[in-house]
Amino acid sequence: MLAPLELDRILEALRTPAGLVDLGAVLACFGVAWWVDRRVRLGSGVESRLVKIGAGSVNRVIFPLTALLLLFVVRSILTRWHPPLFFSIAVPLVVALALIRLCLYALHSLFGPSRLVPISERAISFAVFGALILYYFGVLPEIGNTLAEVKLPVGKTEVSMFDLGRDSLVLIVAIVASLWIAGFLEQQLMRSKTGDANARVVVAKLFRALLLLIGLLIALSVVGIDITVLSVFGGALGVGIGLGLQKLASNYIAGFTILLDRSVRIGDMVTVDNRFGIVSKATARYVVLRSLDGVEAIVPNETMVTTTVLNHSYTNRDIKLGVPVQISYDSDLDLAMRLMTEVALGEPRVLRQPNPPLVLVVRFAESGIDLELAVWINDPENGQGNLKSALYLGIWRAFQANEVKIPYPQHEVRLVADSPIEIGEDRIRSKRSHESKR
Image 1 (cartoon, rainbow, N blue to C red):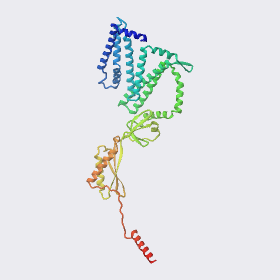
Image 2: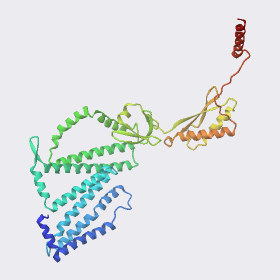
Image 3: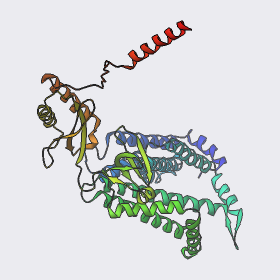
Image 4: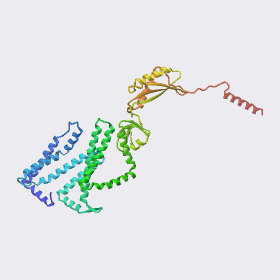
């Protein structure tokens, strides 16, 4: 540790050959560590996710760890001739740098591209380097002693500000570490292709809750809090869930119900409250439905349990599409039905078995004969409107080539001999003759 008066020692050491040797040795250690950091990159050609994460964390601290190792080796050598001064300055700096890099790597791995990450990076860097500067000038121990003297009454006991800050830091580190490990395990489970998707989601959520609970209990035991006292808070929490968090708790329970009974799985095509989409994500609180136009709807799990859900792919993914067409009465009905079937068989997405394309005569309408082409597909996630458009276009071209007419609404007006118009003219003539006689 450097006290304020020891700045004179630094300036005096710079005027001596031994001090210059110490400074040169420190700079040489930093230079070698920088060269090693530029040359060594672990996990560059590895496919394993676990190895990549471990290699990524090691890559972040190659420079500070190498510098720290070299500093200790060179310091042990120079101590035989004189006490090195600059090494006591460099070692805390390297430790602070390693701490910052590890914290930033954990933040990026845990939260990804979040808006809070840059703010957290600046806050962590400012806090660590600020504490380092205070340590250099000998102020940090005085601040610690001052905070230790400030007591806060908590029940029948008193807790110092220093203990409160230290315990809070331990809790934050334990929670962040638990979330980071849980996030890594969840990614590994979701990337795996073995087992059911719902089972993987359930296991991932249980792992997250279990690791968070373990981390919290370890942190509480480290800071010296009796875990048995938490039973009181557990009872209060249960009352709070029963009163104020009823909806949230029901969503979580419904989420685990959906995941366990496998009524809705990731990748299913469902309709909920007139919303059709593919289940792209299932969490313990909500389900994400992605529609064919890219819009994502967040549906609470309670809604998925209490309302009717149309699962279009519960047993299989086959769905039927109806294409209504009308032809004129003077067209060949059998030819039109055969042409529509041929057009449907020409589309690669239309299934041939077990339900081949079928053309039905629906009714004899006013303007023509109503037909309906029924086809089955097993990939509705690729769109239904585009297939209907292709079928309509193919039917139009086939009808044009074979003189099958598609009618348009029309009405015929016929005039008979005793029409109301002639009667009206007779009445007008009789009325005029009557007026002339008067």
